[in-house]
Length: 625
Image (cartoon, rainbow, N blue to C red; front, side, top):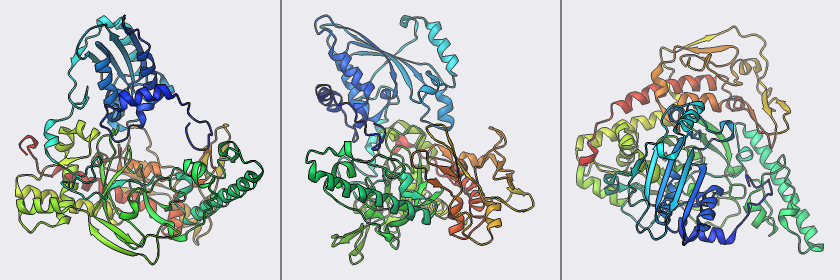
């Protein structure tokens, strides 16, 4: 089942899933083990259980290869190691859920457009009465290979005996490849998700994931006016379904909710909260104007958000970070575990989406807020008392002051963390650890280096938070044609049935000086050629040239900051709902015709300055810390 509106429940196999729980899941140390129940993992369990216990046997799979290095599959790997006598793995790579240089290294997709996941050939051998753990033999097909290159390599090997396998030695964590560094485990965690009572961390346990709405197209928009319209529309429809259900229930007491509700995706996006709980209990929703909030949806891309438990699947700890629009805060965001896009961190000062960073954004705030008298009709109570607390722990403050002196304050530690997480050598040395664990950080032995990290990253955080105010990079040029009668941009989207929808934003003509807004409006920015990144065609009237190559070195969440702006600031129409999101509406509603152009020019400069700051961070001998 892809979403709540498909009404096609995944098949449940009680015995099989019970066996998975007793083996793969039981041996896993991961926090989120949901992917252990993926269909291809079930196939491994099903086949393993059908081998003759007396005679043994052989199983071979061509499957998704994510299990080889997946954080949640540690128990799966440990079980294979204990249940078989020898294991042969040919890693064909091709993971296109990566991006940038990582994607190019992964090479071509073995099954072409049919799969974006990595692929592996696995042979499992069970010999009866052979004691001990399995011997594991592994071969990686290599970097930067096309699909055709890979298929030829497979063909040339002809049979498994000709592969140049290396023998792997798994560690105690169940890592087969990309093994963790033991040094990393000796340092102080920024947080402990498995034990929230552990206070020997950088942050107190008020940190968590970004906002998961389960209906982003409804709950986010560049236009406040359009967002209000969308929310009211879906609430009205949901409430009408509640009425219809309660009426029908009177005459049909055995009525099944899943079979009854209207799954029209242009009306509402269902999830289990509404389908399994709220609608059956007759709970109706109401629009709350104060739930319209500013948010960062993706790096350097702001949107309006409807932040309300009724229509948000999970708000996590966000009400403790930013209880209302008036209470200020900043948070270091990092990617979730098992990220396939390289390590990433970025500071933010408004509501943060779950996918702001890849694999489920983790947010570590400078402060957290306690709300007294939480009884409320909406998300927050106007009369509630809100108390601000420090989120940097007493433990780490005492530790840092003992090492560097009482001059050290909590903010200094906050920016020090941001600095270490930007260190190139830290990311490279502990790449495997950062994919599988929350960061652990030493308090460096050199007093001057502590302050160098903290002060540099205070400047960097200020740059990242105030990126819209940064002046354009001095050498970048904007070539513009003369302003004439300008046409409004249109959104294009191909629907599932192949039909083309063309739509104009409802607010396209709402502001005065519409020609000026249309002159600077974007439809979709692009490079003249794939590899010609010194130039960006902004729209039909403006072209940006002389962009320094260095600007593209600043990568966040798997993509350069510049390319995030290019990707997100385009007019789109969602295929299922028909909702148009026009980023030009943000310009209009803020009465800034040049907003998007100036934003792009600012982000180019922010990128260059970020690279300069990061390149000048202190060098640290991590093995000695």
